[in-house]
Length: 394
Image (cartoon, rainbow, N blue to C red; front, side, top):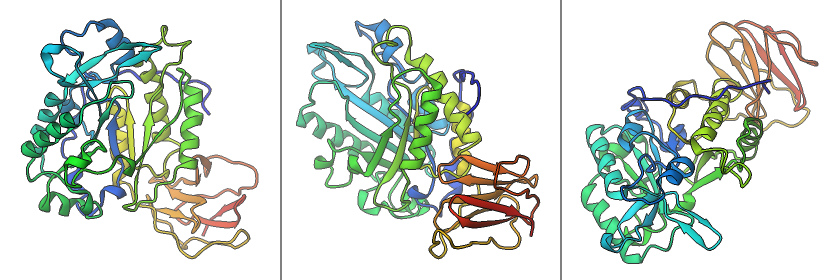
Protein backbone atom coordinates (compact mmCIF):
# COMPACT_ATOMS: atom_id res chain seq x y z
CA UNK A 1 0.00 0.00 0.00
CA UNK A 2 1.44 3.40 -0.89
CA UNK A 3 2.33 5.72 1.97
CA UNK A 4 0.38 8.59 0.43
CA UNK A 5 -1.98 9.24 -2.43
CA UNK A 6 -3.02 12.49 -4.06
CA UNK A 7 -6.60 13.15 -5.18
CA UNK A 8 -7.18 12.90 -8.91
CA UNK A 9 -8.45 16.16 -10.37
CA UNK A 10 -11.56 16.03 -12.51
CA UNK A 11 -11.24 16.09 -16.28
CA UNK A 12 -12.50 19.28 -17.86
CA UNK A 13 -13.03 17.33 -21.09
CA UNK A 14 -12.45 13.79 -22.33
CA UNK A 15 -10.31 12.63 -25.25
CA UNK A 16 -12.17 11.27 -28.27
CA UNK A 17 -12.66 7.53 -27.76
CA UNK A 18 -15.87 7.29 -29.72
CA UNK A 19 -14.96 4.15 -31.71
CA UNK A 20 -12.76 1.94 -29.51
CA UNK A 21 -15.07 -1.09 -29.82
CA UNK A 22 -14.63 -1.33 -33.59
CA UNK A 23 -11.43 -3.34 -33.04
CA UNK A 24 -13.16 -5.89 -30.82
CA UNK A 25 -15.69 -7.31 -33.27
CA UNK A 26 -14.69 -10.92 -32.59
CA UNK A 27 -15.16 -10.53 -28.82
CA UNK A 28 -18.34 -10.91 -26.80
CA UNK A 29 -19.52 -8.30 -24.34
CA UNK A 30 -18.57 -10.77 -21.61
CA UNK A 31 -14.96 -10.88 -22.80
CA UNK A 32 -14.12 -7.20 -22.51
CA UNK A 33 -13.72 -4.47 -19.89
CA UNK A 34 -16.54 -1.93 -20.19
CA UNK A 35 -16.05 1.56 -18.69
CA UNK A 36 -19.13 3.03 -17.07
CA UNK A 37 -20.38 5.96 -15.04
CA UNK A 38 -22.38 6.02 -11.81
CA UNK A 39 -25.63 8.03 -11.79
CA UNK A 40 -24.85 8.96 -15.40
CA UNK A 41 -27.77 11.35 -15.82
CA UNK A 42 -26.88 13.67 -12.94
CA UNK A 43 -24.70 15.98 -15.03
CA UNK A 44 -27.03 18.99 -14.70
CA UNK A 45 -29.63 19.97 -12.13
CA UNK A 46 -33.16 20.15 -13.51
CA UNK A 47 -34.51 23.63 -13.92
CA UNK A 48 -36.85 24.63 -11.15
CA UNK A 49 -35.33 22.26 -8.58
CA UNK A 50 -35.73 23.93 -5.19
CA UNK A 51 -32.72 22.24 -3.59
CA UNK A 52 -30.08 23.48 -6.08
CA UNK A 53 -27.20 23.65 -3.57
CA UNK A 54 -27.95 20.25 -2.04
CA UNK A 55 -28.27 18.66 -5.49
CA UNK A 56 -24.92 19.97 -6.69
CA UNK A 57 -23.04 19.18 -3.49
CA UNK A 58 -24.45 15.85 -2.32
CA UNK A 59 -26.23 14.33 -5.33
CA UNK A 60 -24.49 15.34 -8.57
CA UNK A 61 -22.19 12.51 -9.70
CA UNK A 62 -21.26 13.61 -13.23
CA UNK A 63 -20.18 16.88 -14.83
CA UNK A 64 -20.28 15.94 -18.52
CA UNK A 65 -23.35 15.25 -20.64
CA UNK A 66 -24.25 11.70 -21.63
CA UNK A 67 -23.07 12.36 -25.18
CA UNK A 68 -19.73 13.66 -23.89
CA UNK A 69 -19.38 10.61 -21.65
CA UNK A 70 -20.02 8.25 -24.57
CA UNK A 71 -17.63 10.13 -26.86
CA UNK A 72 -14.97 9.82 -24.14
CA UNK A 73 -15.27 6.03 -24.08
CA UNK A 74 -18.04 5.28 -21.57
CA UNK A 75 -20.21 2.34 -22.67
CA UNK A 76 -22.24 1.58 -19.54
CA UNK A 77 -24.75 4.13 -18.26
CA UNK A 78 -26.42 3.95 -14.86
CA UNK A 79 -29.71 5.89 -14.94
CA UNK A 80 -32.02 6.05 -11.93
CA UNK A 81 -35.38 7.74 -12.30
CA UNK A 82 -37.87 9.69 -10.23
CA UNK A 83 -41.18 11.25 -11.35
CA UNK A 84 -41.49 14.97 -10.89
CA UNK A 85 -43.84 15.97 -8.08
CA UNK A 86 -44.93 19.14 -9.88
CA UNK A 87 -48.55 18.81 -11.01
CA UNK A 88 -47.90 20.63 -14.29
CA UNK A 89 -45.27 18.04 -15.31
CA UNK A 90 -47.68 15.12 -15.07
CA UNK A 91 -45.13 12.68 -13.63
CA UNK A 92 -42.34 13.44 -16.09
CA UNK A 93 -39.34 11.18 -15.41
CA UNK A 94 -35.96 12.64 -14.48
CA UNK A 95 -32.56 11.23 -13.60
CA UNK A 96 -32.54 11.35 -9.84
CA UNK A 97 -30.28 11.08 -6.83
CA UNK A 98 -32.94 11.99 -4.31
CA UNK A 99 -32.61 11.49 -0.58
CA UNK A 100 -35.03 10.45 2.12
CA UNK A 101 -34.02 11.52 5.62
CA UNK A 102 -36.48 10.19 8.17
CA UNK A 103 -39.94 11.15 7.01
CA UNK A 104 -38.68 13.97 4.80
CA UNK A 105 -38.05 13.45 1.09
CA UNK A 106 -35.58 15.66 -0.78
CA UNK A 107 -36.43 15.56 -4.48
CA UNK A 108 -33.10 16.08 -6.28
CA UNK A 109 -33.74 15.89 -10.02
CA UNK A 110 -31.35 16.22 -12.93
CA UNK A 111 -31.60 15.63 -16.69
CA UNK A 112 -34.97 14.40 -18.01
CA UNK A 113 -34.90 10.84 -19.32
CA UNK A 114 -35.99 12.05 -22.77
CA UNK A 115 -32.84 14.17 -23.04
CA UNK A 116 -30.66 11.22 -21.99
CA UNK A 117 -32.20 8.86 -24.56
CA UNK A 118 -31.86 11.49 -27.30
CA UNK A 119 -28.13 11.77 -26.53
CA UNK A 120 -27.71 7.98 -26.68
CA UNK A 121 -29.58 7.79 -29.98
CA UNK A 122 -27.43 10.52 -31.51
CA UNK A 123 -24.30 8.64 -30.46
CA UNK A 124 -25.24 5.11 -31.55
CA UNK A 125 -26.54 6.38 -34.90
CA UNK A 126 -23.21 8.11 -35.56
CA UNK A 127 -21.09 5.20 -34.25
CA UNK A 128 -22.63 1.89 -35.39
CA UNK A 129 -19.68 -0.22 -34.16
CA UNK A 130 -20.19 0.86 -30.54
CA UNK A 131 -22.58 -0.89 -28.15
CA UNK A 132 -24.07 1.23 -25.38
CA UNK A 133 -25.51 -0.46 -22.29
CA UNK A 134 -28.03 1.51 -20.24
CA UNK A 135 -29.30 0.29 -16.91
CA UNK A 136 -32.63 1.94 -16.02
CA UNK A 137 -34.38 1.65 -12.69
CA UNK A 138 -36.22 3.65 -10.06
CA UNK A 139 -34.01 5.70 -7.78
CA UNK A 140 -33.70 4.06 -4.37
CA UNK A 141 -35.59 6.68 -2.33
CA UNK A 142 -37.93 7.85 -5.07
CA UNK A 143 -41.69 7.24 -4.91
CA UNK A 144 -43.05 4.39 -6.99
CA UNK A 145 -43.34 4.94 -10.73
CA UNK A 146 -46.72 3.78 -12.15
CA UNK A 147 -46.76 0.81 -14.53
CA UNK A 148 -48.23 2.92 -17.33
CA UNK A 149 -45.27 5.32 -17.05
CA UNK A 150 -42.84 2.40 -17.56
CA UNK A 151 -44.94 1.17 -20.48
CA UNK A 152 -44.88 4.61 -22.07
CA UNK A 153 -41.12 4.89 -21.59
CA UNK A 154 -40.50 1.54 -23.29
CA UNK A 155 -42.78 2.50 -26.19
CA UNK A 156 -40.74 5.66 -26.72
CA UNK A 157 -37.43 3.77 -26.54
CA UNK A 158 -38.68 1.08 -28.92
CA UNK A 159 -39.95 3.65 -31.41
CA UNK A 160 -36.77 5.77 -31.30
CA UNK A 161 -34.33 2.84 -31.43
CA UNK A 162 -36.28 0.59 -33.76
CA UNK A 163 -33.86 -1.95 -35.22
CA UNK A 164 -31.06 -0.99 -32.83
CA UNK A 165 -31.96 -2.83 -29.59
CA UNK A 166 -30.07 -6.06 -28.82
CA UNK A 167 -32.42 -8.71 -27.33
CA UNK A 168 -31.39 -10.60 -24.22
CA UNK A 169 -31.65 -13.94 -26.01
CA UNK A 170 -28.75 -13.02 -28.32
CA UNK A 171 -26.36 -11.86 -25.59
CA UNK A 172 -23.70 -14.52 -26.25
CA UNK A 173 -22.95 -13.44 -29.83
CA UNK A 174 -19.78 -11.59 -30.81
CA UNK A 175 -19.88 -7.80 -30.87
CA UNK A 176 -19.53 -7.61 -34.65
CA UNK A 177 -22.47 -9.95 -35.15
CA UNK A 178 -24.61 -8.09 -32.62
CA UNK A 179 -24.07 -4.74 -34.32
CA UNK A 180 -24.61 -6.09 -37.83
CA UNK A 181 -27.69 -8.23 -37.08
CA UNK A 182 -29.44 -6.28 -34.34
CA UNK A 183 -28.00 -2.90 -33.37
CA UNK A 184 -25.99 -1.27 -30.65
CA UNK A 185 -28.20 -0.62 -27.63
CA UNK A 186 -28.65 -2.88 -24.60
CA UNK A 187 -31.42 -1.95 -22.15
CA UNK A 188 -31.17 -3.48 -18.66
CA UNK A 189 -34.30 -2.95 -16.59
CA UNK A 190 -36.66 -5.11 -14.54
CA UNK A 191 -39.22 -2.31 -14.76
CA UNK A 192 -39.20 -2.28 -18.57
CA UNK A 193 -38.87 -6.06 -18.98
CA UNK A 194 -42.63 -6.84 -18.80
CA UNK A 195 -43.34 -4.29 -21.54
CA UNK A 196 -40.52 -5.28 -23.89
CA UNK A 197 -41.50 -8.83 -24.87
CA UNK A 198 -38.26 -10.03 -23.19
CA UNK A 199 -36.06 -7.77 -25.34
CA UNK A 200 -34.82 -5.88 -22.29
CA UNK A 201 -32.22 -7.59 -20.12
CA UNK A 202 -33.09 -8.46 -16.50
CA UNK A 203 -31.46 -6.38 -13.80
CA UNK A 204 -30.10 -9.42 -11.95
CA UNK A 205 -28.02 -10.27 -15.01
CA UNK A 206 -25.59 -7.59 -13.85
CA UNK A 207 -23.97 -8.44 -10.54
CA UNK A 208 -23.41 -4.88 -9.35
CA UNK A 209 -21.11 -4.93 -6.36
CA UNK A 210 -20.62 -1.72 -4.45
CA UNK A 211 -17.37 -1.59 -2.54
CA UNK A 212 -19.27 -0.47 0.57
CA UNK A 213 -17.04 2.47 1.40
CA UNK A 214 -18.98 5.22 3.14
CA UNK A 215 -16.20 7.58 4.19
CA UNK A 216 -13.72 9.61 2.10
CA UNK A 217 -10.82 7.33 3.08
CA UNK A 218 -8.71 6.21 0.14
CA UNK A 219 -7.02 3.55 2.31
CA UNK A 220 -10.39 2.01 3.15
CA UNK A 221 -11.42 2.09 -0.50
CA UNK A 222 -8.13 0.49 -1.55
CA UNK A 223 -8.73 -2.41 0.84
CA UNK A 224 -12.33 -2.80 -0.26
CA UNK A 225 -11.49 -2.83 -3.96
CA UNK A 226 -8.72 -5.39 -3.46
CA UNK A 227 -11.21 -7.59 -1.64
CA UNK A 228 -13.65 -7.14 -4.51
CA UNK A 229 -11.19 -8.71 -6.94
CA UNK A 230 -10.57 -11.58 -4.54
CA UNK A 231 -14.22 -12.34 -3.88
CA UNK A 232 -15.93 -11.54 -7.21
CA UNK A 233 -14.54 -13.57 -10.06
CA UNK A 234 -16.24 -12.97 -13.41
CA UNK A 235 -17.30 -16.19 -15.12
CA UNK A 236 -16.85 -14.71 -18.62
CA UNK A 237 -19.94 -16.56 -19.79
CA UNK A 238 -23.48 -15.45 -20.59
CA UNK A 239 -24.80 -16.23 -17.10
CA UNK A 240 -24.03 -12.77 -15.68
CA UNK A 241 -21.88 -9.67 -16.01
CA UNK A 242 -19.73 -8.56 -13.07
CA UNK A 243 -19.78 -4.85 -12.26
CA UNK A 244 -17.63 -2.91 -9.79
CA UNK A 245 -19.10 0.36 -8.56
CA UNK A 246 -16.09 2.45 -7.59
CA UNK A 247 -17.37 5.31 -5.49
CA UNK A 248 -17.36 6.62 -1.95
CA UNK A 249 -20.69 7.44 -0.35
CA UNK A 250 -20.62 9.87 2.53
CA UNK A 251 -21.72 8.71 5.95
CA UNK A 252 -23.53 10.84 8.54
CA UNK A 253 -20.27 12.22 9.94
CA UNK A 254 -18.86 13.32 6.60
CA UNK A 255 -22.11 14.28 4.86
CA UNK A 256 -21.82 17.99 5.60
CA UNK A 257 -18.05 18.26 5.22
CA UNK A 258 -17.61 16.24 2.00
CA UNK A 259 -19.23 16.66 -1.39
CA UNK A 260 -19.60 13.86 -3.94
CA UNK A 261 -17.08 15.70 -6.12
CA UNK A 262 -14.51 15.67 -3.32
CA UNK A 263 -15.02 11.96 -2.62
CA UNK A 264 -14.78 11.14 -6.32
CA UNK A 265 -11.29 12.64 -6.52
CA UNK A 266 -10.07 10.05 -4.00
CA UNK A 267 -12.06 7.14 -5.41
CA UNK A 268 -10.80 7.80 -8.93
CA UNK A 269 -7.21 8.15 -7.67
CA UNK A 270 -7.43 4.70 -6.03
CA UNK A 271 -9.00 3.17 -9.13
CA UNK A 272 -6.29 4.60 -11.39
CA UNK A 273 -3.56 3.43 -9.00
CA UNK A 274 -4.86 -0.13 -9.10
CA UNK A 275 -5.43 -0.13 -12.86
CA UNK A 276 -1.89 1.06 -13.53
CA UNK A 277 -0.15 -1.14 -10.98
CA UNK A 278 -1.41 -4.12 -9.07
CA UNK A 279 -4.48 -4.97 -11.16
CA UNK A 280 -2.39 -5.87 -14.20
CA UNK A 281 -4.09 -9.23 -14.62
CA UNK A 282 -7.18 -8.85 -12.46
CA UNK A 283 -10.30 -9.71 -14.50
CA UNK A 284 -12.75 -6.82 -14.66
CA UNK A 285 -15.86 -6.65 -16.82
CA UNK A 286 -17.67 -3.40 -16.03
CA UNK A 287 -16.44 -0.57 -13.82
CA UNK A 288 -18.49 2.52 -12.99
CA UNK A 289 -17.14 5.69 -11.40
CA UNK A 290 -18.22 9.22 -10.51
CA UNK A 291 -17.23 12.34 -12.48
CA UNK A 292 -15.99 10.56 -15.62
CA UNK A 293 -12.21 10.81 -15.59
CA UNK A 294 -10.07 10.82 -18.72
CA UNK A 295 -7.15 8.90 -17.21
CA UNK A 296 -9.42 6.25 -15.69
CA UNK A 297 -11.27 5.75 -18.97
CA UNK A 298 -7.99 5.40 -20.88
CA UNK A 299 -6.72 2.79 -18.41
CA UNK A 300 -9.96 0.78 -18.52
CA UNK A 301 -10.15 0.74 -22.31
CA UNK A 302 -6.47 -0.15 -22.56
CA UNK A 303 -7.15 -3.43 -20.75
CA UNK A 304 -9.03 -4.65 -23.83
CA UNK A 305 -5.93 -4.42 -26.00
CA UNK A 306 -3.52 -6.34 -23.78
CA UNK A 307 -2.83 -10.02 -24.50
CA UNK A 308 -5.51 -12.30 -23.10
CA UNK A 309 -4.78 -14.68 -20.25
CA UNK A 310 -4.79 -18.18 -21.74
CA UNK A 311 -7.48 -20.60 -20.52
CA UNK A 312 -6.64 -23.00 -17.69
CA UNK A 313 -4.76 -26.19 -18.56
CA UNK A 314 -5.13 -29.41 -16.58
CA UNK A 315 -6.14 -29.18 -12.90
CA UNK A 316 -3.25 -28.38 -10.57
CA UNK A 317 -3.03 -30.06 -7.16
CA UNK A 318 -1.46 -28.32 -4.19
CA UNK A 319 1.86 -30.17 -4.40
CA UNK A 320 2.06 -30.52 -8.17
CA UNK A 321 4.68 -28.63 -10.16
CA UNK A 322 3.73 -26.53 -13.18
CA UNK A 323 6.52 -25.20 -15.41
CA UNK A 324 5.84 -22.59 -18.07
CA UNK A 325 6.94 -22.95 -21.69
CA UNK A 326 10.70 -22.48 -22.07
CA UNK A 327 10.28 -19.04 -23.62
CA UNK A 328 7.81 -16.39 -22.55
CA UNK A 329 7.54 -13.62 -25.13
CA UNK A 330 7.15 -9.96 -24.26
CA UNK A 331 3.63 -8.91 -23.29
CA UNK A 332 2.48 -12.53 -22.93
CA UNK A 333 0.76 -13.71 -19.78
CA UNK A 334 1.02 -17.20 -18.35
CA UNK A 335 -1.36 -18.35 -15.67
CA UNK A 336 -1.33 -21.44 -13.51
CA UNK A 337 -4.12 -23.88 -14.30
CA UNK A 338 -5.94 -23.00 -11.10
CA UNK A 339 -5.46 -19.26 -11.76
CA UNK A 340 -3.72 -18.81 -8.43
CA UNK A 341 -0.73 -17.01 -9.97
CA UNK A 342 0.18 -15.23 -13.19
CA UNK A 343 3.59 -14.62 -14.73
CA UNK A 344 3.98 -11.63 -17.02
CA UNK A 345 6.93 -10.22 -18.91
CA UNK A 346 7.05 -6.52 -19.74
CA UNK A 347 8.50 -5.11 -23.00
CA UNK A 348 11.58 -4.10 -21.00
CA UNK A 349 12.21 -7.68 -19.90
CA UNK A 350 10.99 -7.44 -16.31
CA UNK A 351 9.24 -10.59 -15.12
CA UNK A 352 6.45 -10.23 -12.56
CA UNK A 353 4.29 -12.59 -10.53
CA UNK A 354 0.71 -11.51 -9.92
CA UNK A 355 -1.45 -13.17 -7.29
CA UNK A 356 -5.06 -14.12 -7.87
CA UNK A 357 -6.21 -10.96 -6.08
CA UNK A 358 -4.41 -8.83 -8.65
CA UNK A 359 -1.62 -7.77 -6.26
CA UNK A 360 1.93 -7.84 -7.60
CA UNK A 361 3.84 -10.37 -5.47
CA UNK A 362 7.27 -10.16 -7.05
CA UNK A 363 9.15 -8.73 -10.00
CA UNK A 364 12.69 -9.24 -11.22
CA UNK A 365 13.69 -5.76 -10.11
CA UNK A 366 12.53 -6.57 -6.56
CA UNK A 367 13.08 -9.40 -4.10
CA UNK A 368 10.88 -11.08 -1.52
CA UNK A 369 11.63 -14.09 0.71
CA UNK A 370 11.32 -17.54 -0.89
CA UNK A 371 11.69 -16.20 -4.41
CA UNK A 372 14.83 -16.49 -6.51
CA UNK A 373 15.95 -13.81 -8.92
CA UNK A 374 14.66 -14.13 -12.46
CA UNK A 375 14.75 -11.96 -15.54
CA UNK A 376 14.67 -11.83 -19.29
CA UNK A 377 12.57 -13.41 -22.00
CA UNK A 378 13.35 -16.92 -20.78
CA UNK A 379 11.69 -16.56 -17.40
CA UNK A 380 9.81 -19.62 -16.19
CA UNK A 381 7.30 -20.10 -13.42
CA UNK A 382 7.29 -23.14 -11.13
CA UNK A 383 4.56 -23.65 -8.59
CA UNK A 384 5.44 -26.32 -6.04
CA UNK A 385 2.71 -25.21 -3.64
CA UNK A 386 0.19 -22.41 -3.74
CA UNK A 387 2.22 -20.61 -1.10
CA UNK A 388 5.69 -21.19 -2.62
CA UNK A 389 6.84 -19.67 -5.92
CA UNK A 390 10.10 -19.83 -7.81
CA UNK A 391 11.10 -17.83 -10.86
CA UNK A 392 14.24 -18.84 -12.71
CA UNK A 393 15.89 -18.40 -16.07
CA UNK A 394 15.20 -20.86 -18.87
